[in-house]
Image (cartoon, rainbow, N blue to C red):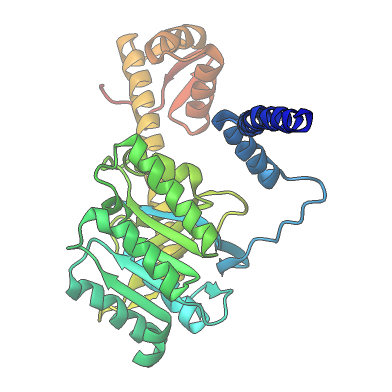
Length: 389
């Protein structure tokens, strides 16, 4: 009986102990889960860690190796259009922006065009035309072919030209992303970057577009050249709207096309550069409408303009001198034809609103050239100029 009792008692104890053990194990599992949950970083901590990683990746140290800039083109050994960056070409309407782009394309395809030289070996080029008709866009190919004399298959193998004037604004950036992946160009020309935004005065939209272009140029190791009009006022050379402001701030190079007044000469100059500025160069059209070098023509234009300006300045100087002398002669006539030098000086200081030393110089000049004569300290008109005023 005792054994049976002992067995029953032991069994009862075991039966009572088993649920307790299960409870303990369950408690340990909950504790582990809670512990793991507590150990997990919060969303704020995760964000901070991501930012720390970003800071580590973007920090430039003394021993950081940064590859030198690789330029697509150069003018007189000054590089322009660095890869992995964005650039801008600006101008008034119809001032030669697309014409300048044709020269750049020709130089990239042929190796050199006028003073513009390529620094890339058989580069691939993407050209987005968002402004012109398909007919005018096709003229880009025809002009480049005339300039380079390259066969169509060579041009088409390196240049991917697209007429996008009828494409919706929302599709342009996605199209650019796809063409970058597929064509892998080294140079991208966006003739009409304004079409990539709904409003060039929208600051947020403009910032976002420029940010995307910077990311794309870096990701695909290419130079992205953006074309944008300047403001309408002749004296205002800033690119239009918030888009122009952001583009100018972020661009490594900003070139400007200026049409010389009274001629068809287009001068391309560097208005802003992160490093060395590109020297100016000029192009124009021959009698058949072909693009030709115009550096010499512009030099002659500038010389002619300087000569004309010098002539105008001299004419203005001579006119002022004549008016001063006529004023002096009238004063002498009013004073009976003779007046002391001291009195004449005092009158001219007030009438001409000039200082005494300056007026004294005038009188000496008139005496030296014979307009006036001085006798015993008295000034009078020379016989050659004696006439009523």
